[in-house]
Length: 447
Image (cartoon, rainbow, N blue to C red):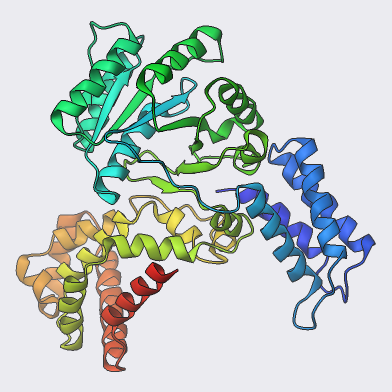
């Protein structure tokens, strides 16, 4: 995510590295590189110029503390300005009303339908809501079918009618259906076009008037850069929507849309899509995104994802097993599955400070754990429960059954044994991971 932009910012800050103090000359050199980085990321010249002028004014107006280098100070100033540029604070979705009605708008191919299903899944699993998806793209039967398939994946009902070619009528009927059946959130997926046109704008304006949504979200493909910003402005002029959703942020995006859309339309980015899976949707935090752009990672989001998968009772049981040296391959696979539930592995690694740069040329695939799972699956229940019984002949059989070499099986067993030793030594040192996680949860709640 934003790898090119991060690299160029890093180069810009290196100009100040080793400098004893900030001067107009070295700041100008550094900010010239920052401006080039923003322009390469498809940020408009006007915004890039305004951004660097603001940074320059703040940099020259500050004295460098003895404990802070000019380069560090510049990073701090750029970080704060990036955060402000993207909206300063997160903006929550409006779920007032019973049912709450959410209207989804955007161009064809922007990821509206996928986002609608992701949002339904998010509201159901994380907000405890009972959502209804509504297929109001009456022109493309494939769009209706796609929403039905995605609805099945997240076990959310989809209201549709291929015979009804009037989206306003369909939306009204869906609202009546939701009220009768006790749905408390309605998510209306609308039709898009390949470009902004009057017919599409009139249609979605009519749906807005008929449905009276509490929340209108504009979905935009972040890979389209400055075009995304221009489209967002055109939609906002007609719809006056409440927030923006950036999709495909995990792709080869230059970042211009994320950096500038807030300042152009004065509407917050509320969600970002980071993959095709139904749980690959994140609430947008401007400060956390600024951290990641500047290579600082995003530990808070990483902890939050871990907490979502963390079960206190299961951890207590596991801790007892570790203390007694009874941690086995069933527990090992259980921990791997918890990590997999947290999301894309490369995205998780990128949340660790400094790892984006370190892992730049390393291809971490989503199926990175498949080989491990194959080896463990080839073990007997006894071997998984009691790894110490795995001798040479058993290792040969496991390698044959999993399609791996004996060396790969040996390597995994060695890694498992090393992991078990480390976990036991931590446990014996008196560190209580269950208590630590509980304390961490309390700290997050108190923030």
